[in-house]
Image (cartoon, rainbow, N blue to C red):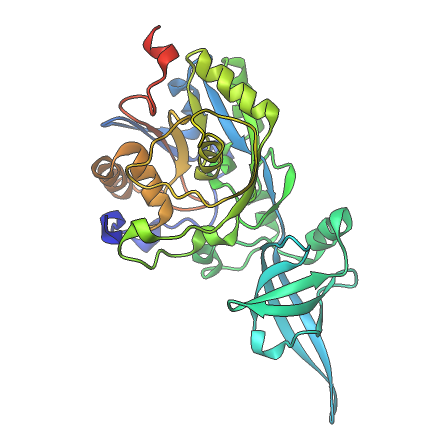
Length: 361
């Protein structure tokens, strides 16, 4: 299985740098097996039925991009340097891994002041990343970071424009609850309160899980044989309640539909034993064609980067040839791509996996 199997031509003009408003006005490509329908996210209920369950990732994106100042004494007096840091994720000891620019201007033991409340000391360097120890922790750290930082927009947006105050709302889901992500679960950005209320009234159920999306989600695949690729790890949790809700839906013959690849990867991690179960920890699950889905019946997701692990995931769900046709339709129809782009609802031609409760109904 080659990396080139997951490539396609994407015109730069289709890369979205701002979301549409309202959120549910984004376009929605619905693929039911080989049938493709063009719709809008607000129409999602047309393809859902009572008893279906949407699985939502309630992680909250941190304002993880920081600009600060390093001070150093020299023979000529105090000198300063501007330091930029993008937090990548917390370590078990409470320090944070970060991309630091320019890293050469910061030595272990030196401090960077990001705001009157927030500062950090470089404790080490590993794999080209800096390790930062902040002066605050817990809720105090979260509050100071929210004040000092900006939203960590994906590289393909950040290269076109800087983050601004609009992104503090746009790049956060309406149900974000647990701080810890440095990238948004972007399929969930399309949901607003009106859409959630309408689906709930229709009999669609919701389950919240938490997976803190890391910057590793944007890392390119560098191996030609994709089966040898190693995924980055991300922390997630499927609570007792969430696992029970998902199990009950499957037992009743309803469909379990994760919103976003992060929610899908998490519930499939929690079902590696064969059935969904409570789970907490770091997952590096890599889903590519040939993967056996245990709890996922369909997926709502945005349109992904060529040659990415997310293209491999949707190909595992729908089949490579079918995904190629879906993406060709999206390109020719002018769908907007990536984090602030449009969405797709991918429904395989048969349940994945076969649901015995539905088969007997």
